[in-house]
Length: 279
Image 1 (spheres, rainbow, N blue to C red):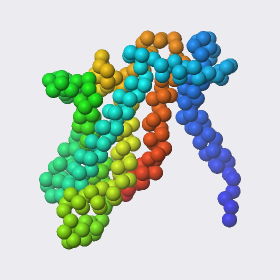
Image 2: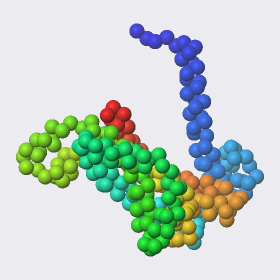
Image 3: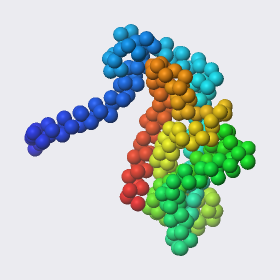
Image 4: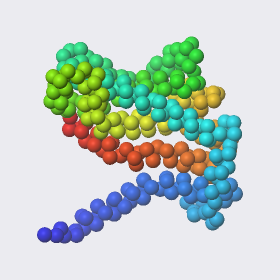
């Protein structure tokens, strides 16, 4: 039996089309402006298609030097993001596994403390953290930012991992323990592979946060050689106020790696979100 095409169906389709147009419109502006030369980007409407599309903006941006060295900013963003995500996955998964297997007061108190860490604003502790990193000589370095983001996003990571770990059956762990496997071996060979959907979710969410972060990178990396792409875009706007075609080109370049990673890991992200909600 076929469903009839009703006026309500038409309304839903029209709404979906409008929502899609609204969501994709900023991406359309980015691409259109990035394909225009400097003169056309100033005199023409931002919505208008380029009369003669060009990729010269990408060559200009990628050949920049100093504070506008986009390749350097891209590499800094990759190093800090990958390092932070790896640290979060390693320590977050271990902490969540211990909490999920400790149902008593100690485990409950630890879990609550991480949840509270999600709620508390980081800005309250930004001055002590800044002073601590400066004293340790980690201010304006990759390692300092990795440590900062690891501590900042650890509560969220543990929260996501714990919800998924609590839903894992203990049968395989008990069988491995009977066979003489150590707790570390059980976690590495049995538990962590089963946590792969949650790992995908953690990697995407925390990776997006670190990659797009502007405030912390501006405060802790200002004036250093480890400047990330969001801060570099800001400085680029300051020096090229009217060259919006170059600014939008930098934005597109900054979007490509994280979009590629999301497309690669979206299946794990959906599985992890569904598993966490179920748990």
